[in-house]
Image 1 (cartoon, rainbow, N blue to C red):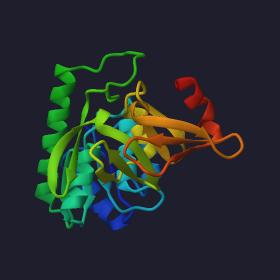
Image 2: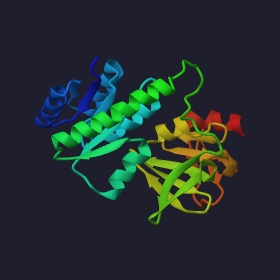
Image 3: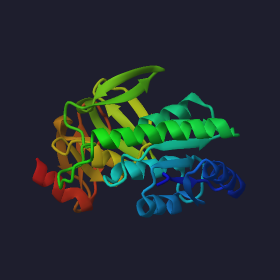
Image 4: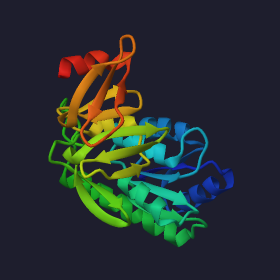
Length: 253
C-alpha cells in the first residue's frame, strides 16, 4: 500500500503541482488550503508525512505544528515546512517546535521526492523499532523539573533547565520567558503549549496570559475585588491573578 501524504498549502497551483509530482512516483496525496483544514485532515487521514506551508490564513504552519505536538495520536507524524523564507530565525522557530525538515520554494521535483522518501523511510523504521504503546499515561512530551529546552540568548545557543524559568507571559502566539538570571527570551510558542508541557508540580497558570514558577513566588496579596497579585523573585512588577485562576493559587500555596 502506498504511503499517504498531506499537503497543506494555500496556493492552489503550488499544491497541485506538488501533489502531481508525488502521485507520479506512487504516493497517495491529499491537499488542504489552510491550517485549520489541514489540522482536521491530519486527524482524519493519518498521513505518513505532512508537507506544510508556513504563511497561511486561519492558522499558519507554526500553529499547525504546535497543535500536532499536543495531540498524542499524531505527534509523531513527520513534518516538513514549505517556505520561501530563508531567515535563520525562521528556521530556528520551526526546529524548536519539532519540524523534521524544510523545503524552499520554488521546489524542484527531485529535491521534493528525495526529502519525502527519506522522511517516510525513517518514519517506517521508527515505527517498526519502537511501536507506540497504548497508554492512558500523560504524554511523554510533558517535562519534569530537570528537563531542558534549547534557547538562544544574544546569538548564543544553549540548553536551559525549565526550573530556571521564573514566569512566562504571552502576546498572541509569542511568549516571553523570564529567567532566574534576570534575562528574557521570546519564543513563537503559545502559552497553551507551555502549559501542556511544563511540569505541573512547579508551574501554575494564573492568568490567560501568564504562567509562573511557584518556586519563585515571594508574596501574594489581595488586589481588586476577588483578584490577587503575585510577586516573583527577580521581577519588579507583580502579575495579576485573574478571578478565574484565583482558587488555583490559594490551593497551591
